[in-house]
Image (tube, rainbow, N blue to C red; front, side, top):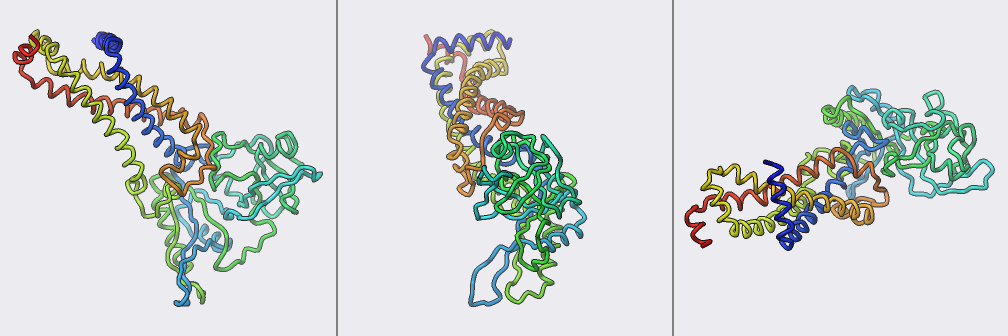
Length: 426
């Protein structure tokens, strides 16, 4: 029966080329726009190397404080000192893994090869040894630095930086200079396969935050915490706990110049979608959801009108089938299968178009719904585009679009009187 419906749909497609072309084009545009939103969300939130634990991740950025002098208005974001960061970690009960990471530098840094002939602008990262447990970097050569190495001048570099400096990734044991400081290379990691340069793992070289550093920075510092909960379900418990711990530390302080306001502790998806830590999923994806509904509802409405017009011309056919005993369910399934073939063809074209649009216009696409996103941080790859989550999304969108556009006109057509329908076609 299904083969017969699909064969009939194929014949109809060849006979009604204008209807077929418009239907497929409308479907393709709708699916392409919707898929673009799905791709953007997956790039931001999906389990991509080396941030494969995003669903269990909680990020502490800092604390907001205001000046104790009421004549000087304004709120300031202060990050933790290394001393306070370690204090929070020690008192936490819900942290599974954690790393301390220095905030991004606004100055330019350069890496030099050991002979000083190669000079490359880089982004260095200063982290503790927990960084390698929070993020799943693949080591091509060597190993990460451990607690025993943290007070030594050692570094882990990416494969791309190793190639630029020494035309090889096997550079363990050689030296690299960051500005004027020498480091021994003890490990080389694979660059993110996705090219996903986020603010957490997008640097070129990783060194110990403890090396040549005074941890007694008192209230202000430049450290943030990146933590893993035991499971995604416990991220909210961890987020609230860290908020309470940091609040207690700053409220108990005797700082005379700044007064504590609030903490900035967010789950990974809250940080990437730039929403406060107390936001829920609906708040976070509201703007994406509105766009998705517009991309699906408007084309579905237009396609539904086209199908309603087409059903009027098929009333006699439906009436004859009903007079020979066909049930409403059989007729509805026939129409749905016919339109499913059209929708599927349009969906395939739409997916291809969306992939082309994302790959060729990533800077525009990544900032389309979020102006705070730095598009240059994202390089689209096959891992982002071809995965079970997005494939399932395509199938679901195709099914929803088919049912929403074809079901209502078919039901209205079936309510028509058989005799009257046959009489009108005389």
